[in-house]
Length: 338
Image (cartoon, rainbow, N blue to C red; front, top):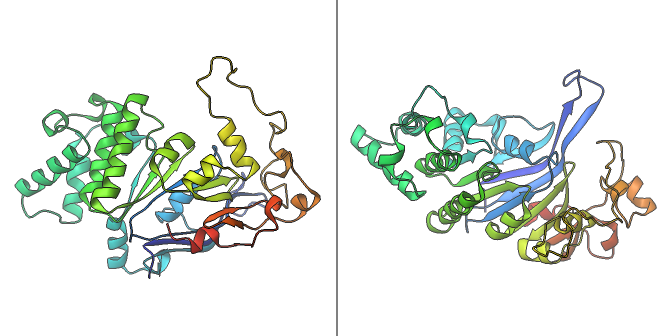
């Protein structure tokens, strides 16, 4: 079965200072593979700390930037080789929701502009009345009242309202996939549940697959079915979110989960496991595992050879030599369609 959106062994390098032709390169994403199938629709989380390559991945999947090596495919077609009509279909079927909703708006236009533009561009309505009905239904679908939203400028809405308008905009196009890049990181806690509920509703009721990009493992656990943990552009661990969060196997995943504050007054917030070294090595300096210089279980081989993904249980795979007795699964993120 042809996947909706696929990344095949994608690597992205950026030049340091001197641009792409600079001798010094920053590895933003390294040998990353992922396949998203629309049947059944899924929710996959991409998690990791700042600088792990999450946003670079989203930009690659949207075709905003091109990979240094590897391929991005939509329904089996290479993004860079699609015809104009194929590209138009891709733009409609793959929609994005970004971290800062305010950046998506022109402050001189009213909120209506971001909703009427896709309707006109993709010819979704035959009349203004039909367009109005589509917009109102989309706004209600994300918990907004059209009479309180339309006709206002972006600064007149709260951050949560602006973000829900962007979800409604994506909903207008009836997409197959939504790439949500930190969609709740800039809204207050009271609105996070509403936005996450909207994404879950799109998945369950409308059959839309969601790629949820976040640094917050708590919301990833609440929303996603599968999770991929990134560190310095490399996959550290991947699998069913229940197994990965409750039984983390990679030392980096264990560190991330151990950093989540617990509601216990006897625990001091900010305490961390002294086994882990707080300072990470500069990107690209380590030939082996990117986490080797911070890992309490580091071995000689970790510094010399990057570990493959070892399949420890079903779809659960870990890039760590602690599990070298398990079968290798180099394409674990690729052959497990999410």
